[in-house]
Image 1: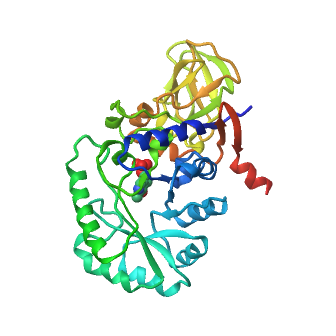
Image 2 (image 1 turned 90 degrees about the vertical axis):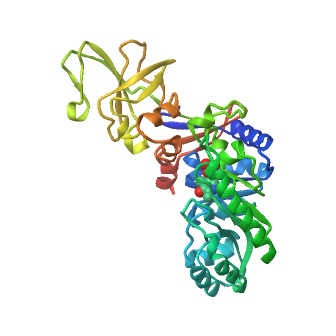
Image 3 (image 1 turned 180 degrees about the horizontal axis):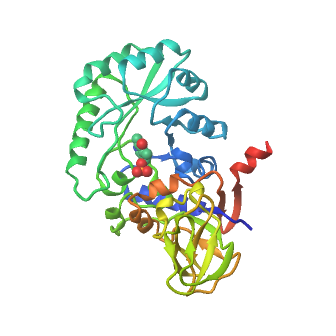
Length: 373
Ligand SMILES: *Cc1c(COP(=O)(O)O)cnc(C)c1O
C-alpha cells in the first residue's frame, strides 16, 4: 500500500500519442520528456513509448544522458543550453543539441572530437533561443564548422494554444521562409516547429511534432480544453491517504498563523502531503481534494509535509484515499498557474506507480534508491 504516490497509466499515454497522430497533419512524434516527463518519470515512460515515437526531447544534458543510459536508442535532442564540456559528451552519447549563437557554436566545434549532430534554433518570435531572420549570414557560417552535422532546424511557438491564430501564423510564415532559404544552402533532414497546441489546433507542416503536455493527457490551455475535436485522457493522479481525523470546537484555529478559525464544531482530517511534495503553499484555505467521492476544502495553511481539510460533511477515517487534484485545471487557475507547473513540481519524495493493463508494472521510489545505493 502506497501513501503518497502518483499513479501513471501507461495505456493512456500510448492512446494519447495515437490520438495526436490521428488529428495532427504530421505523423512523426518527438516525445518531450523534459523535467522528468513533466514530473511523471522520464525513463519508465520513454521505455514504454519508444516504439511509437521517432525522437525524444529534453531540456538539458543531464536529462539526455539519463535517458540514453537507461537504454533508449532512438534519437535524443536537447532543447536548451549545452555547455562546451557537455557538447563533448554529447558526441559520445549520440545526443543532439541546438545551436543559436555563431561564436558559441565555433567554440563547441573547436573543442569537440568527432561529429556532433545539431539543430539550428530559429527565433521566429518567441525571443528565447534562436537565430533571427536578419542573422541569416551568420547561420551560413555554420557551414564552415566541420565537426557539426546540421541535422535539423526548428522554432517554437508563443501563442499556439490561444484561439487567435494571428501571431502563430506570423511565426509560421517566418519559419517557412527560413525553411526555404536554409534548404537552398544546407541539406537538412528535419524542420520542426509544432508543439502540443500546434499539433492539435493548427494546420502546420513539421517533420516531427514535439509534443509534451498532450501525451500526459492535459490540454495546453483552457481554450483548447473546450474543443471537442481531440480526446485526451489524463494519465496521472496524485494520491495520498487520510492520516488523522478529529473534531474541533468553535474558535479553534487550524495550522500555522491561525489563518483558519472554526465558526462551528467541525470534523478535520489531516493529509500527509505538503509543499515539500509539490502541493503549493498557495493552496492554503483554497485548495480542494477528493475523499471518498466527495470534494472537501483545505483549512488553514499548507505545511511542509501535511495539510488539513474540512470533512465535517463526509464519512472518512485514517487510511482513506485522497485525490489531490480532482480538477487540475481548476486548481491551477485558483493559484494563478497552469497544470504544467503543478505537474513539474511533483517532488522526488512521491512514489511513481505505473499501471498497464490494469496491473502495476513498475514502481519508482527515487529517495529509496538514493538511500539504498
Ligand atoms: C517544452 C517544449 C515543447 C513541448 O511543449 P508542450 O506544450 O508540452 O507540447 C516543445 N518544444 C520546445 C522547444 C519546448 O521547450
